[in-house]
Amino acid sequence: MLTSELYADKETQLTMDQQDDRFCLKLSQLFNYDLSIVGQREVFEKLLELIEKNLYDETTTNELYEKLVEKELLLEQAESQIQSLEDRIEFLQR
Image 1 (cartoon, rainbow, N blue to C red):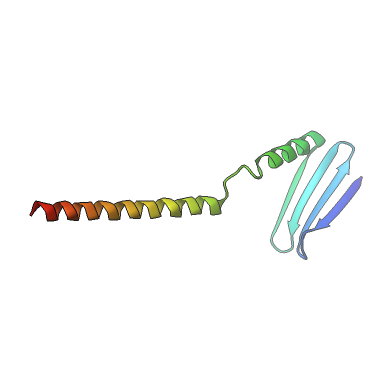
Image 2 (image 1 turned 90 degrees about the horizontal axis):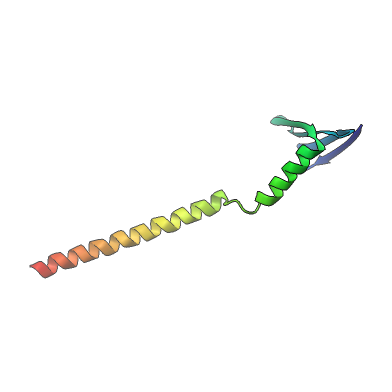
């Protein structure tokens, strides 16, 4: 069995065990969580392909929030313009 261990920081550990064509990927953070994924090489290759393909294609939460703020600003501007036009119409009708 082949084992590899990596540390992202003092508390986060990534371990990958390989035996024949089977893998066990373990992600753990001290005092917080553990995640284990067991599968054959093809499963991990598909996961890697999917992650690489979609990693940068997905809209992030921050991007969605920025778009929402832009839409709200446009809505406020439109409402302000409508109110100005209504006030002007009311003034001209007098």
